[in-house]
Image 1 (cartoon, one colour):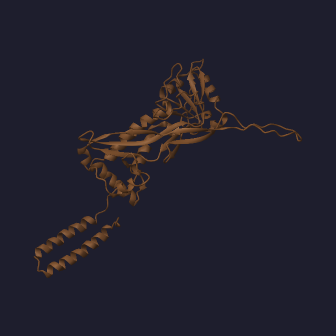
Image 2: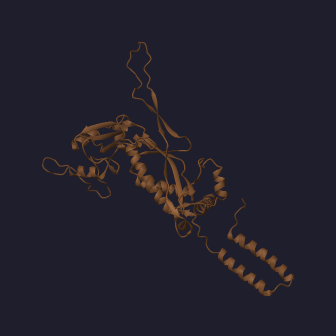
Image 3: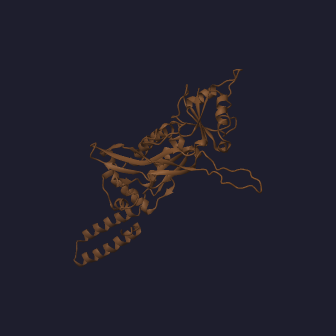
Length: 374
């Protein structure tokens, strides 16, 4: 690809070519009015080329590189008109091209989508997040329930071989998540319509709602495995207690000390409401809101996060989780997000089939405890 020239370099080249053309026309006794018209058009062109470049080279505080600008422009052309230029073709030959079709979403757009998802999904704020590039699953070696053995021995006693602990491999598979918003052809042709922001909003909202639910209650079938899906089978401790402050204290005390420094509560707003209504024998509320400016309210001294997908209070409800989620639960993001433009299926609408891969599962079950309301 030829090196892109600056506006000043282009003006100099145009002036040079114009001078040569003017000299040639004067030699052939061309009409002076024709030469004057050419000069006027050249002056107008020079004024336009010297105007400031309003191309959005900075997005959300990030200075885009030349390659990012070229690819973003090419992707916008592809989205609006279905035209594939050399920049998209070049990416298609690279390792970040989707073999199933579609083109890599520009990095700036993809980052904005992920950021919206993080804002809307509370689990992402407290869980461990890793990104993998190509493998279809994330593997974690973890100690099994058995442990290395040791013992006390006298100075002259025979040393016998002690038992070894064993490791097990935890696997978190990736699952495909998709969204397919539709835009009319008229909107896409209109250069004033910010199609990118629209798709960001539509895709982010859809992905956020789906993943937030899956991280909590997902069954692991074509979606992440949630920590409330058969928690005992996953090795997570379940505390069956009456809904009271004593029950919450028992849940808190069941967590090992090493996980307490970064522990947090996870519950929905209705459960929080019921906690705030708890009273002692004198009818006084046990809930004590924070009286310090800038310091959030806590439950038994620990911060809490509200998650819509946590069950509402009720008999046998797994309504509260407490633990160090950064060690307990891992979210696995596949690298990249892909979009395929489809203008044939739903005429006159243009579909944008957008996909990504994501997984989730328990990494360290000891770091999390679940409250089951008796």
